[in-house]
Amino acid sequence: MKTALIVLSETLQAQIFAQMEAAYPNEGGGFLLGALEAETVTIREIVQIENVFAAEEQYHRYAMTPADWMRLEDDAEARGLTLVGYYHSHPNAAPIPSTFDRDHALPNFTYLITSVQAGKAVEMRGWRLRPDRQQFDEQTLKIAAAE
Image (cartoon, rainbow, N blue to C red; front, side):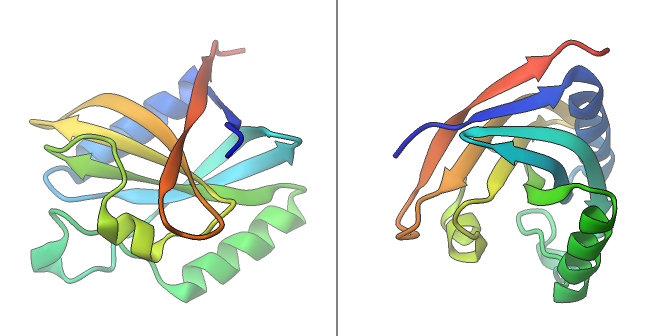
């Protein structure tokens, strides 16, 4: 599968890191809004979404409601943006998609996963699920200097 380029500003990465650190020791997450041109995904905005998974499972699971998806798609479109993906954290774990992530992901979306170790965001990696849903492929993540 072709590797896509994900472009994320330092500012947005810092916002994601702050959100994921605040959610620790539970998982946190949200939506990535931006543009897709050829094989480049440019993230322009992020929108944090409350984790609605059962409270006792939030330390290793993250979920949002279908209503969140519908609202964000409409909101993004109204502002000339596209819902290009989703971000979430893995507390005390590597930023590698889990089987649960794969089972609940959609092909053609960008997934950013942040590893939060002892309350500190330490690493972010980007992924895309293959169309056959068998596995994720890591994408190239470019952190762009703030403008």
